[in-house]
Amino acid sequence: MVKLKKYRVLVGLSRILLISVLMLPIFFSGEAEASSQAEAVVVDSIQKRQLFDVPKRWPDRNEIVALISKQYGIRFSSLLKFCDAGGRLDEACHIAHIAMLSNKSFDSIVSLKHGDNSWSEVFHKAGISEDVIRAYRKNIAADMLKLRYGIDHEISFVLIDECYRLGDISRAAQLAVLAKMDVREVLGMKRINNSWDDVAKLLEVSFDA
Image (cartoon, rainbow, N blue to C red):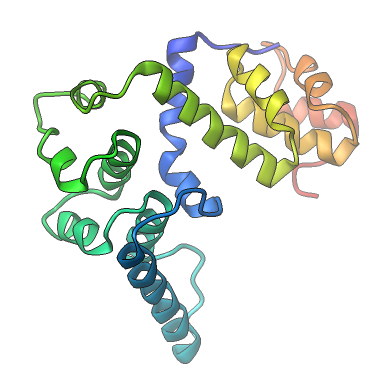
């Protein structure tokens, strides 16, 4: 059984924000400008790839900006301006996330973040409580686990509250699907002195399947 202290779970969950933008459906309705302009960027990029027969596994910067715009209902032009000025995509995702939760503009949140303060301080300045942050991150993690592995939200919430690593939950879920077992049973097979590959061998399945 592999568990992690609660404060480290929050740190780990914060890292899936940008990943969730690339994986999950749109759960929040944004402004019309954000949606239409973002969709146009994605469609244009896909058409150009098809026209020049360019294989590509990951979206380019503008496509990711468009996806962030759609996910959080932030104007595409505001996000692009931030990135053109040297802002990183992970920073843009953090700011968009805070803007959505606080119901404030993207630019107003940009003004709160500087080199001398942390994201936690920005959350606090934006008036967002820890309970809201925790609930949102749990929902994002549960949505991802449901989408990829079919785990019920209630089960995901319990596992996260019990301080399991998100990576371990994902690995266990993948093996549970392959072995047709309950994810909690598979999690119970993981010990400090064995690896997930060892668990897969015990179940006679493979991550490569």
